[in-house]
Image 1 (cartoon, rainbow, N blue to C red):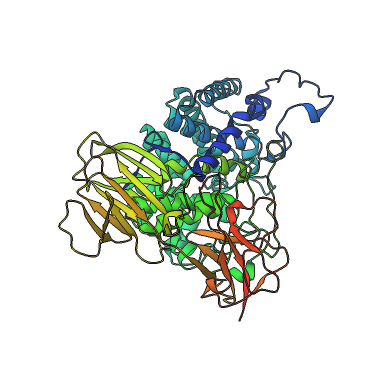
Image 2: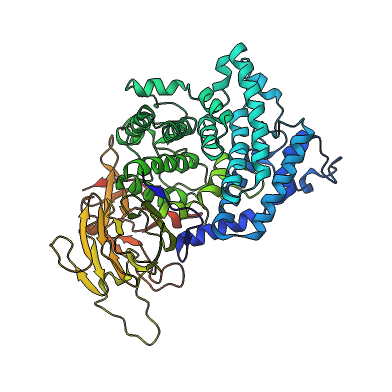
Amino acid sequence: MVRNYGLGEVKVTEGLFKKRMDVNIKYLKELDNTALLQNYYFEAGIIIPGLMMMEDPASAGLHWGWEAPTCQLRGHFLGHYLSAAAMVVANTGDEELASKVRFIISELRKCQELNGGKWAGSIPEKYFEVLTTDRYIWSPQYTIHKLLMGLLDTYKYTGNEEALLILSGMADWFIDWTTDMKKRKPDAIFKGEQAGMLELWADAFVVTGDEKYKALADTYKGQGIFKLIKAGKDALTDDHTNASIPILQGAAKMYEVTEDEGWKNIVLAFWKSAVTDRGMYATTGANAGEFWIPPKKLGEYRGDRGQEFCTVYNMVRVAEYLFKWTGDSKYSDYIERCLYNGFLVQQNEDTGMPAYFLPLTTGSKKTWASKRNDFWCCQGTMIQAQVKYPELIYSVDDDKKKIYINQYIPSILDGKVDGKSIKLVQSLNMKSYDAQTLFDEHGGYEKSRWKYKFEICSDEDVNEISFLFRAPIWLDGDVQVNVNDEVVDYKANSSNRVKVSAEDGYINISGCKIGDVIDLFLPSKVKAERLPDMPEQAAFVDGPIVLAGLTSDCDVINGDFEKPDSFLYSVSEHTYDTFIWLQNNYRTKHQMKNFKFIPFYDVKDESYTIYFEEHK
């Protein structure tokens, strides 16, 4: 099985993804510890200084929105916060965030003790009793799952034993509750949007080896959706998207725990139903108003409440599992599309805040969360998403001594292959021009963001290691390979020391030595992606990047969508930002009203249109 390199082994360096990570980390540091803990304090009966009586609630410094003490989901965000902050600590060793995490965990332990030693939640235990009735209540298991996830991640990434102690007490509470429910109301166990519980308990068993976590996983494995999927039925249409995806993450984790092929087959069948057979928008979403769209009905359901961000994040996590089991590059291709058109598109580059939904109608605008007054579910998954990049870039098969370069993100890998140390530096290789240099008309692809350099800087011999560079599905032509300043034709049999060959969605390079430098160029071009039920409508995609038309009222383009260069021309200029040269910008031509296309992730508050109708 392939494994991902961990957060302590990969550092994201220059460029777009590092910039977005930094904005997110800044936000994590801004948030006040007391406000993050407010609902846990309230539930434990702890009086926050100055808040016994509030003469002016607006100045109380509390978090509001879904974190307000009046909301039934209150407290969910802290779990996301712990997961995200712990991952940053594991990746960078950031002591400021490490201190915040230690403090929060110690305060949660105090709350748990005041609640009797087991319960450490931010909501009343009686909410779970409501699940035995027909009364409406907003997802108590969802809320508590986020805390449990945060506790487990804190232990996994930082080794905090107190976090594991709190989790153990909560597990005891759930054993008591589920035992009681099995006697009184078995279906209550599967209410309250409990989808993440199966993966959580199974993962806790993997991490600790404690049988009580396995017992809880066995309790939550009886999901009704599994029967429908195994029967080959469409179990997803009109079902709540983000309630179903985490259930399949649980199935994936159960496969890794039990090695029972039945679990793996369930996840594969889910992927076929959710992605292959259903289709997706160019941005990867396949939901409208939080529910799965019927297969191939994307045009009919295209609206202002599409692509909930949580679904993008959770589908990436399903794809991660499938890649680990198969090594199939199609899952990394899918993840790449999600990163550019979900992780980046739905994060405000200035504030780090998310867009809950992604509107795809003519003249749409993104709606951003506020920093302290919304705390939607997507605000929680967004802070986790922006620290996940290091885990997605490189993988390794130790037995076969293969390193997979899954994502083209400037970074440094410093890990091991089958016990041997390996250091690989990935960087952009875009030509820079200073003021004394004349413009090079023959630079060609030198100005492209898809030109990368890989330097092998290991201290140990790497001759036996194969480097598998993903050949993206969006390639326009062959990958161009240059090793130590020499062009390599990997389609021809070569007798050189360094061997280069094509291999099932990858370029396999082996026989390398310390100090070797590999240059790759991945040629791309703008392509139209049509809606299956309305093929006259299409979005334009440049490599993996969806382009947004900066227009509020135009959704018709005169031209042949199979030949975008007939109505688009490139816009280029020298910049002083992430890229040396402006990337993936275009302007229309031969239209009644011309406008600009830019990467969708660069859109903040502008009106935009993604899908256009073809008029020949």
